[in-house]
Image 1 (cartoon, one colour):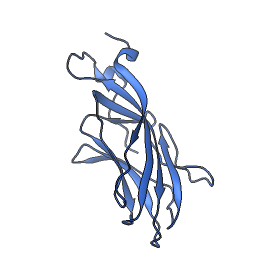
Image 2 (image 1 turned 60 degrees about the horizontal axis):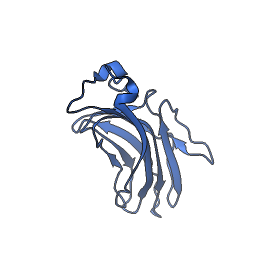
Image 3 (image 1 turned 90 degrees about the vertical axis):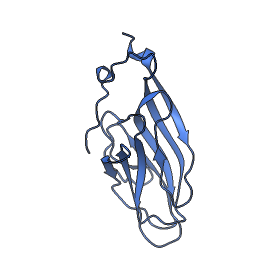
Image 4 (image 1 turned 90 degrees about the horizontal axis):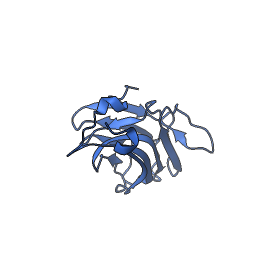
Length: 159
């Protein structure tokens, strides 16, 4: 059986900005399962007076199986960096990114699954941008003899 380095690759992937007022939506592309080790994005709110509270959620396309809500809201007319990484606790420290809790071993997304934001009180002028993730991809597919569970890829723990 090949060792882990022969069947995985780790890389940084950037994602296009969604339209203003739309949520982030990330779906594995490529040759296998994704383990998202970290996710960083900027969220800029419009001038409309209301606090917004971003959350991250994972779904299999039908059922949401994991969700993490930000420890704080963001007011109107502000921009801030938001970060989630394997094992991150919730944190809203001044002058640093707001941390969203994330599973200890990263978040596993099989092909067809989705990670996205759910933003309470999102406005049509709010904008997600500068979206980047550190991804470990377990290569699967035609010709693969990889036993997914043997590499520690198990369903994510519910937060």
